[in-house]
Image 1: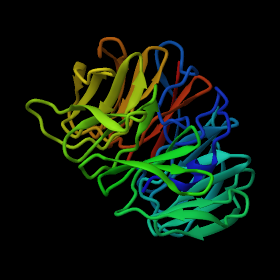
Image 2 (image 1 turned 45 degrees about the vertical axis):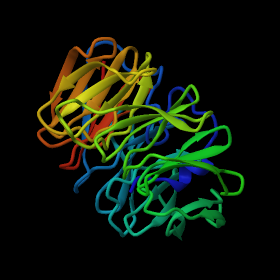
Image 3 (image 1 turned 30 degrees about the horizontal axis):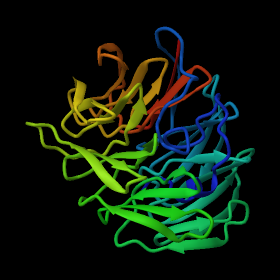
Length: 340
């Protein structure tokens, strides 16, 4: 479960030096202008003490990292020094923190949403969910709830007052943030665990039917579908959209770059294991983890590999880029910070 509810309410403008939640911005495109300069090197590592599949957030010079045992750690971005540790009490899984207004929000696998004081790591409130909810960000009280026909595993993408949910019920739903009512829904026809990325009036996301879809939100219809001609595997990674390309990892062990208009493959990079990590883009380069234990840096234009780092453990976490730093975690519980 990725953190969903906080993104329905955290719609303030993101500072360029922050990556305050999964995918970095409200449209979930995974793109920033604040990437690292030059070649990367490891600046620091931190041992969380448990498995990590959650993706980090960066806000106000602090890294917030969810840990599998339900904890959240706050680390100084420049040094990796521990600032505080919050003990949630329930398993967190892939749920990723979101930070805004001095508060850190995260979900857990039992459906609880936790609000944590960003200054000292103390709990502010906790709310038990069961479907798709909008909560008052300060008080943790119900604003509205919306019913779907299946679990919601995705993070909501936000645009034009709507929250877009690619659900496990095979529907892309547009939910009004103001009252939680459904504006419209588009049938994708497949179980979906990835979140939609929004760009130019379109939504892009992969499915467990081994496809990547492009949906025209204005005409409310699917305009292209991509499926690899030989390697038929699900797409769990959430796509990045940059440079006229949709970049997405597949369980076919490949990082795919698709033409944003046609869905035709522009290039592909083959790794040694599946890619559930969601790529981030900055400065003409793509940053992504793989379950082959490696963190990759790839040229956006060509797919040429620039650099790789062997973490010694699978990386399903997605990178966060801010302040010239790149932060990502491996499944053995290590948080890595890279810089130029």
